Amino acid sequence: MVPDNGSDTQNDTATEADTEATDPALDSSGAPTSENFGFYHREGQPSGESVELNEDQIAARKKRNVAIAWSLVGFMVVIFLVTVARLSQNVAS
Amino acid sequence: MNQTTNSSVHRAEGEAVSTASPRDYFDLMKPRVMTLVVFTAFAGFIAAPADVDPFLALISIISLAIGAGAAGALNMAYDADIDATMKRTQKRPVPRGAVSISNAYSMGLVASILSVLMMALAANYLAAGLLAFSIFFYAVIYTMILKRSTPQNIVIGGAAGAFPPMIGWVIATGEISLDAVILFMIIFLWTPPHSWALALYKSGDYAAANVPMMPVAKGAKSTRLQILLYSIVLVIFAGAPVLTGLGGLVYAATSLGGGALFLLLAVRIYKSRAGEAGSAEEGALYAVRAGDKAARDLFAFSIGYLTVLFAALIVEHAFGAYWAVPGVNG
Image 1: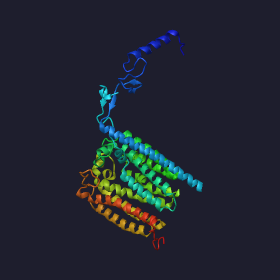
Image 2 (image 1 turned 30 degrees about the horizontal axis):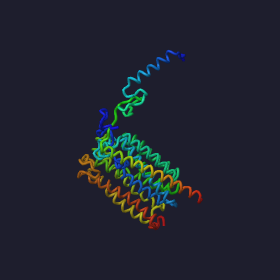
Image 3 (image 1 turned 180 degrees about the vertical axis):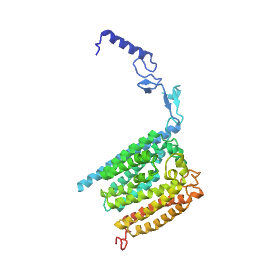
Image 4 (image 1 turned 90 degrees about the vertical axis):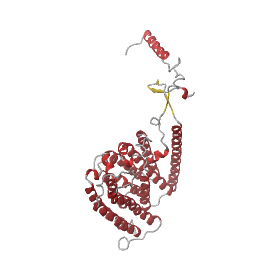
């Protein structure tokens, strides 16, 4: 362990502030700027890139989402009904 | 915020973002195989001497179907390279590019886990364990190990497809009996002649994909002989349910008639030169060259044969059409 001293801490703080000031994807508070829409590609670094879906892809994604939603609802209903059926069997026996 | 105005926004051009529909994911589960799985499992369930809550039985059979579909999805994910090479399978969702390999794996794994959980809840732990094992057997033992390494791939791997009637039986009774093993064995013995008949007239496909199916590894003549031998054993063994009392008159008649036809077609294959003409030019399942017709006929009939055998059990046990065979189980 290396003991901290005042000057080291000041240097670290200055370096971070420089980085933030020179990064075009971040504003002065460190938040993503409007230019990158908050998209990051790795290790918290803003990529500035995003993917725009065409109409077919949006429609396909919506269909998949709806199918997944119905599957989940169906699964929950089935588990509920099976539990009720099992409980009634146990009570009856 | 309007993303379209930003210069760093990229239009996705198909390959990057999926346009897969729910139907593509459904196709990933091999619906035709699922149908046969449900049918044979239902026959095993109905033939078993037990009284089960119909709703729980329905959920159990659905779980089995989902589990079979999950195994199919895992198979398609792993075999994407083979499927892309073979004409017969080129239009499957993964080689077609509709579903990515990783998505196929994801779906297969999630569906496997959910189906086994549902089976455990709705039926019993033995049925759930058998379902889990059959998925593992098909996806790992058959698909990942046997299929690419030995011409006996579908002989051993056929066990995976033989589990459904046994699982159906266990759903009903909670235990494995001799009759359940007999139903398992019927499908186990049925698989080699069924699969090799297809492999005979699609051998070019399998050869192109480096899959050592029997006609590719041992040649058409040896395959035709083995089809005949397995068919004889199958037809004899298909009579076993009559001896134990599982099958009555209807089953016995079906087994005799269907077995005779099965043997006839197997002899026709043996005498033919099926498999020596190479692969059919067309990719469709039943497309065949003239010399391979005997193989195509047995392949098609084998599906009908298995269907009527199990249908006979359903008719006898579900519709009260069971009459003991005089002198055997009467």
